[in-house]
Length: 108
Image (cartoon, one colour):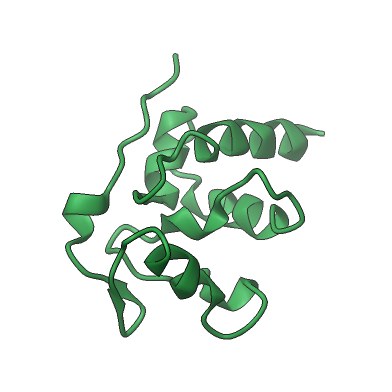
């Protein structure tokens, strides 16, 4: 049951990521008060693929790498989704990552 609550908190933040922006697993973890749980955020993103309202493609690692791309249908779907939002990706790396990075607000 605790995972369900954790996952829902992750999804609440993920739903807020603006079109054309990305954030990291760690930034979401910090935002929900679980700073050392970036990997669990990754598990939540992987479990979200059946939910159309969760933009999991906008969550990448702290360096802007598309580490979750293998969890999307097709080989380049994550990259294609990001590129459709104007984000340039080369060799699984977001170009100008800092420009596209969105920092979620930390909840109390």
